[in-house]
Length: 334
Image (cartoon, rainbow, N blue to C red; front, side):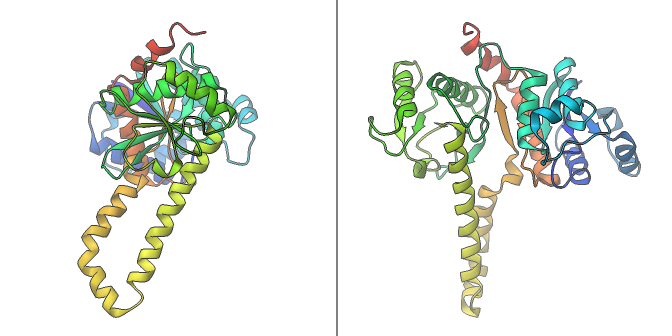
């Protein structure tokens, strides 16, 4: 049976919400098992009164925990019996394991995945790439959103290639439209990195649509948005902050008076739909593209529903042949 390894003690709501997310995932889909990485005594004790298919669950004992306060590379090197490192090692060494999920320290997960699982041959730097909602009900992949704050043009070209392969193999977009994030849509806009990357993308076989502005990320005009991790992270957090502000502002204004409350009741289904589109809990985490197995970084504040989404996401990506779709782009590169 194919398996997904889950870091049970990673995240703000670990371990209980992470375990509950695993159980939800097992109830939601068949065909895979889950390896729960963490303190076996705690996990076993928590599961003893739960109803679940025990043939689909394995516990990997790992007593240590890596926190957000630790230096990622140091923690990965010194805490080899942590739920994160033990889980990553199992992911690398077990042919039946097709994916790994963690809501733990972003730096530790990304550094650990690169160091312990390893990159696809030819990939210079793996990139964190969340799928975001758009106005056209499609999804757009933002790559990179924080893994690599200092990039070179060749790295951004590889991000575009990975984004193209992901959208084609997983999201079934035949010819993904790729935009390069800049401070304007004109060809000459941007800093030196954007200028040099623009030239590389223009010469490539990708469906490159030119420079684009951050305000157009969610319009549905692009399938892949390419950025370095510094500006990509700023763009992502700006989108998240704006969405949260708008939801809170609408709630405040629509509950300010009795007539507005009555009007809001009539519009409740519409607002519920909007909230569902913008809710990361249902969509899962962000894939870390470029490592040799599927790795999903779930939001640090993930609860059971979000973890369930991330696990199902990892399974779907693995079943879609994500890793095999990426490999041909880099097999000839050094």
